[in-house]
Length: 419
Ligand code: EPU
Image 1 (spheres, rainbow, N blue to C red):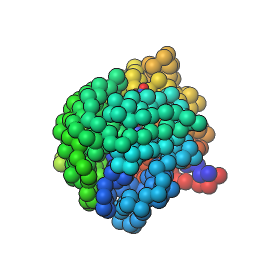
Image 2: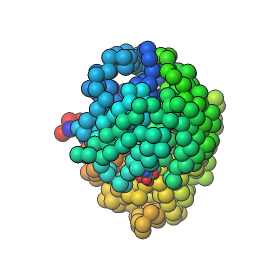
Image 3: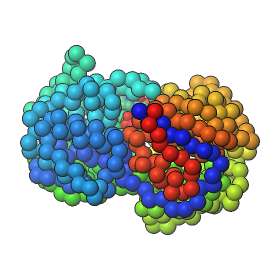
Image 4: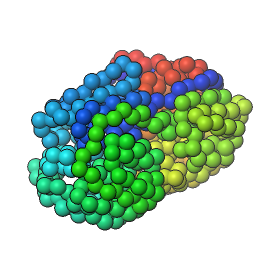
């Protein structure tokens, strides 16, 4: 297992290129199960979660070719089994995304029920209910969701809670269902829209993605295509925070600024000068200490829960006191205890953290607990006095492509060492 060693105090300066979006490529890879013919996915980030998804498809007998130029070719015609086994689902919850496509295309699916995880209990009841409303027979047995359906039928699905992968699973299932499906109270995340665009490019009939009502007119079959994944808005936001926390100046390239309105607003409130172009964002903090910013997470287009931990890190050294409210997951403050070990002054009560900015943090050995928590600890390490050791960085490799190389190119003093 590796750890990251960070010598804090460097001001970040320079340019960084953003990779394809983790949370778009994962459902898109699952959606290749729907297509007859070969799908070629471009701008695929080199991430552990992508490797796990490829392993999952491979375990089912799907033919997958990985090209060095960030593309993946998938041909699902060789599929032999519709089972997503426990050992893969356990390491990556988003494996649940194969449930809808397998059921819609092959009439059956056996997917291990994901357990709880560090950020909350994260049930998948809405995925299951939606499929049942579309006529599937679903039972949970021996820890597996076992689903069968001759052909799914279009239905009106009203989601109790806004769920990203739930919306995606049902949209994929509906793409090959008989008749019209509407998903109401659908997630509006850009990654849902990217998946819809991928499905549409394969021949699906989908309207309304990006609004809270998605209408899908089921078709008989989908054909292979070539598709480029959208840039990762959370990776983008993470590098912007990294620059802001160190008082630096950075240009983020190959990104999609229109997807980051809520995050950019908060960075400006923190005192950063932010400019945007078609595919770039520049941020200049002019060496200043950030001002504390209040955060309230909620589904898109509100402030993303996946950026909460990084902003808590920013608030720890900001001028003033910030209130951070997490409304999406019930237990997403695991980074707080580690930040406290670095000298942060944070109080958590239920889903609210009160962060009182301190003049400085001090380096410490700390442990990553989930993907975005890891990012927040690295942010803190960048600005802390002395050396910070971040352990359990396999979490970070799930969702950030070569983060230490990208940060080092921006001037951070960071390196990965084997433990
Ligand atoms: N929920 C239910 N029942 C369900 C589904 C969800 O109660 O059937 C609840 C969840 O427990 C949670 C809320 O609904 O409290 C929202 O969860 P959602 O289903 O939207 O989350 P997700 O689809 O499992 C995706 C991202 C997460 C991101 C969330 C919220 C992927 C692969 N994952 O998860 O990304 O935090 O949406 O935006 O798209 C990350 O990248 O670090 C990450 C955790």
